[in-house]
Length: 287
Image (tube, rainbow, N blue to C red; front, side, top):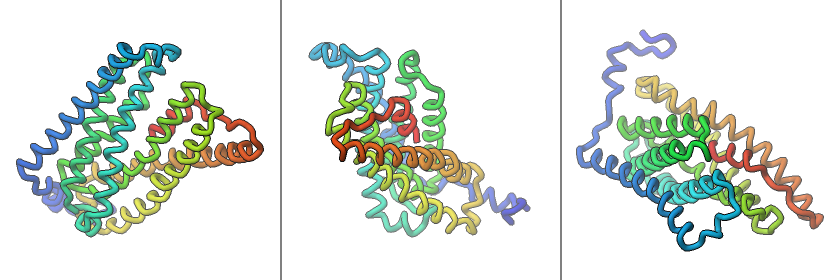
């Protein structure tokens, strides 16, 4: 017997097997991963080439690290827009996914996971190539953990519902990246910087804070099922995401709210909004 779970090893072996995936489905997911990787990776260098040829003055005043970071954030926003649409659509439309939090089937959910795997692999490769500019080990660990989690979800067909909730967080990434870009170009005192900051707080609330108790409640609602306990890796993926990422999200959210209150008061007094530091914005993005 497994201590604390009441399952014998034979039952675990029977339950911890990939869900029925057809060869066509697996070929589709592999194709999406490859396409997402190639498009994302090439996009960085194509954008860099276009800017250098047609508008070299655009990035002239930026440091090498900021130029690289800006281009990767364009990639990040395109990915965020795609997966936000897919995850929102899936959570709204897929009754089967909502009916079974563990084995609920939805091909589009797996496609969204595949897009993210390809993006993260490409972003990780770009980070390695431009390590002197934007290299950070926290990004490496974040991307590796996230990519492996989505690979597990696609291969075993488990926990797609939770993956879609996780991808909703990309809504706030769009405004975080845009805020950082405005900061790089010295637009901290502009109205667009102020209103983008409000949208960043709003999207962070809706995409990361509100789903958090729903995410935990849904995990607890399946905690008495044998197929939930059938894989230690699966449970680690679910709970590490909450214990690590959501703990950081709550910490950043508290700081963000404090900053938003100060900015709002200064804005009402016709003062310049206080900027968010570049390092804080990068931290938020990792969440």
